[in-house]
Image 1 (cartoon, rainbow, N blue to C red):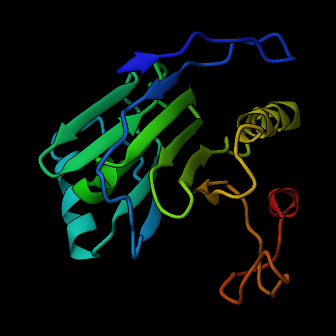
Image 2: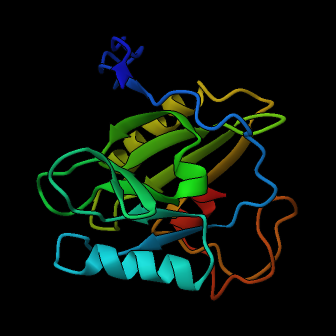
Amino acid sequence: MMALHPVNYNSGRKKPPIRMSGRGLPDARLSRLIVGTWNVRTLNEVGKLENLKKEMERMSLDVIGISEVRWPKDCDFWTGEYRMICTGEKKGQAGVGIIMNRKVGNRVQSYIQHSERIILLRIEAKPVPIVLVQVYIPTGSYSKEEIEEIYEELDEVLIGVKGKENFIIMGDWNARVGEGIVEGICGEYGLGGRNERGTRLI
């Protein structure tokens, strides 16, 4: 695995390195990809990761984006037939990750472990790559300025996504979009009323 040298954002923060994972399998076709997202509240307990893998198998999911991993260090490892890539968080409150079955895990081209709240993976596929982003937005106990900073960091990460790539962004936004369809953005399965966070997300 090779890490490219970090460069600077315009904001002055150092950009995390892009981790290269090789070319993957010769046949990069993915005829179907079933993706989910889940706030697991923590994986830092005995048996939680195994339970997650069992749920993936039960629901026939290829990929799950995870919020609140709560592991102290960044990770990239195989556990049985699944590959886990995550960002660490020493306070034990955040951390995001993406866990994939072998079909997808073998096709990871590169990834950016941006922060304890944002991770990006690029999956080799034809005719164009698939970009997966998992996000965990802070709860209401954080200030508007802190929330806005996370959105600004997300914008910086997404600058590198090419227009022709298939793009999936998921996560726990700590927002409520409410009932009602917003054409091209929200479907018909929202609940309750829209809050300020929901408006910001849309």
